[in-house]
Image 1 (cartoon, rainbow, N blue to C red):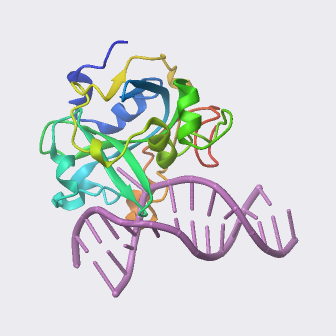
Image 2 (spheres, rainbow, N blue to C red):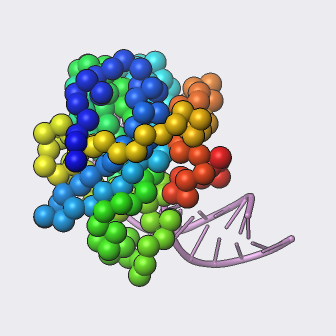
Length: 202
DNA sequence: CGACCGATCGTCT
DNA sequence: GACGATCGGTCGA
């Protein structure tokens, strides 16, 4: 499987990257077990100028430091004390853009994914939502800061080509605190895909 | 269905 | 000491 090059992640428009990540494959290899899925839902976070971003206003803390790494770095953090959320840092170093992976459609290692999610058989809810996607693919805070271009554990690879008309957009989910920035159309998803989270799927 | 609520903890104030 | 870029269960209609 062919990995995406650094030039894909180093670009300056994170919303364009978020849309183009739809259809790509997110692959993990943990203890020799491969699990993978097609990315079907993403959100773009525009860094310093985006009130919904952890790096709004150039905010730099121990946690957000990862966002300032070069494009292609993994940013993983714990949300609500329970869920891990996986992001891909984009743009050049010191520009804290990131794409949140909100849902994937499983393609490899489905039995292992069922085991991790404690389900007897495959179910479209298994990998719907950012917390579930992380758990299903075995991603956790240990992966924060790793370079996706060279890591043996997590890779982003070529996948399906998605027709622009098959892509839906909407405001981002769960960012009401961001004022007017909560309205920006920075959520992207594959229209009609079963694994897309939330109500808006078409 | 939709609305509500509890779980649970790292991070920042 | 407060608060989430969430999830799954429960309750009522």
